[in-house]
Image 1 (tube, each protein chain N blue to C red):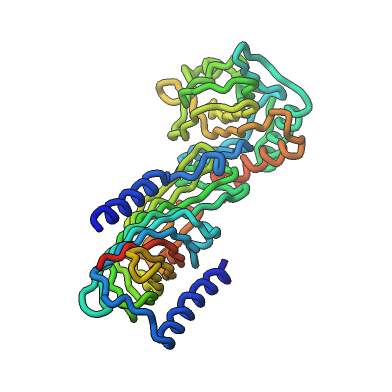
Image 2 (tube, each protein chain N blue to C red; image 1 turned 90 degrees about the horizontal axis):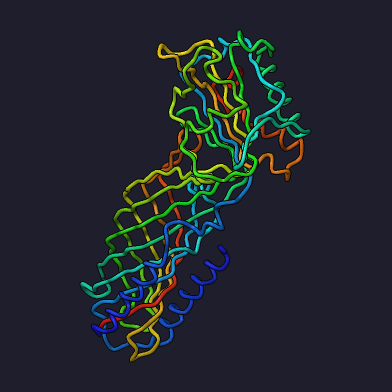
Length: 216
Length: 209
């Protein structure tokens, strides 16, 4: 999966560099704003990866950007994500003298919401690479499902998300385009289940692939 | 442009609305063994010396109940004895003077919604609490809820019969259930491993800290 990620990113940036070197196709205008809807695949990192090791394609992201000056834009992102994994026989020890041994299923459900500052290097071109920083928070639910038992903790957090990506317009006169982006996310969220599991500062990588609606 | 924006947001909303928080139940609810235990954290289990337990267990079906014994039950009760003895307890055949009474029952073919705790205390196979002068059994802790018992489930209760409360209730110091153990699909070795696990995961038992 990492190879696929790297290949996609390499393709996007190679295309944008090639465009820059060979008279990039210009739209003739800088968009005033754009909206994105993307499919989001999450790869957990660090302690989060010990909780759920699988990458998960269960996620969507909705975003908007408004150009302030030149390539500088501000906007928002709201997302929905879930990572999950099934584990074999393990024992969960409760805080009250209880214990249960069985197969268990872990998942974390996330609703991130962030304000975003982005800079587009070639905002008026067909392929417009950008870098951005998202600042905001998440609502997360960490569930440990042991057969019919659902043991869970809910937490709000603060999060930072640096991102690189590119907006690729489908045609000079089209108001639709594609979005490919890759980000690293750091949060203050943590997972704690009695004596069974503890982690802090959950981190993850996200790959976003989606569509863009460009407003002139 | 406004129409396109509305279309984009509506499409996104529809997709988001169709996404459930919980993964599909087929992914997460596997019908297999589950070993659940709970103990009274306020009691010191080293203070008990003897225990009483029958070699047979009680079966409960949707039609009747009674005593049950076969090779699987023999391995089940044998393993309970082995675990109890290894913790330093001594099995006694004097049910009147024993410190602990261990009741074991088996859900033969019912799958019912139960009101836990309480519904199975009156099984014919269990000694009635009045045998030790009690007016009923009770849990000094809040037992976890159970919505249903699957076929083959084993229930184990450890009663502190010599220390009834002033209102004559006999405390259950430990309870355990092993879901689906006696369905006939499991080997003797698996049964023994599950009983071992029930004892091993009870942190309050002597030697388990």
